[in-house]
Image (cartoon, rainbow, N blue to C red; front, side):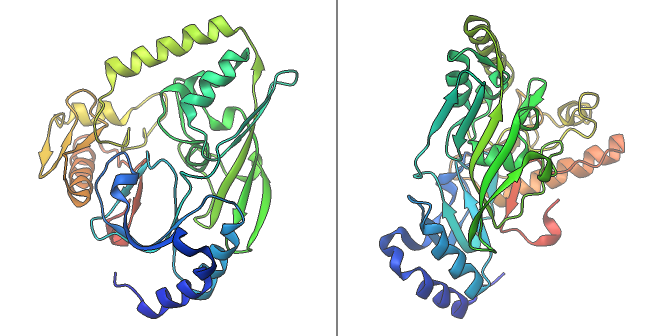
Length: 315
């Protein structure tokens, strides 16, 4: 996909008041846990919610696509990059408000899930311990209905505040409006999650601390570190058939293609080498998907967001 130069110049005219918060050709790979991939044509470093109005005007006037980048823990950007406007939220203030009396928690999009898990547990609230092992932020967790260890965002999410880039305004959406399903939601690319409200339960801080310790220990024992984005495929039958087991059964643990390899520790993780290629990661995902389908009949779909690749290559 080529860059529409006129569209880019038009977008820049609408972003001029944001000054050096706007840059061209910014590498996105270092902003992801894969640490591979190309650059965004335009990148806006958002430090204040008010800046999103200018981004909305730029996107509307230019027709350029928009990509929200938080912690990048569920994102693979093609080596060719993203030909649009990337919005970086990593520097937006992260806030947490815990109402211990009602067990209701409000967290801004940039709050790290492990941080929120520990804060709520220390406040004597239960129901969010599972999130301690997920290296993402609230915004991304809402978008993909992140989960693990028998729970997910849908279990406690009450409502979210989003900035709707298409409308140029904030909206509050109830959890029932989000189409939350296993590792997915109906949120559109133009919806920028700003805050989420969770309803937890009163619990025991010591019991929650023990559970958090057990989850962390399990993750360290069973999942690899390094350059990856966690599970790359959605379990085809949640709770019954896991993608990792299917990949294992197909004999693909440790399989390598170029600078990408199926993890020896967990078959549903694909690792990228230092200085590796995002295109190699996708090529290996595609190969694994085909071999699993041939051996089991299950057609896997990606759990990670695939950005900048040809539409026909995304699944």
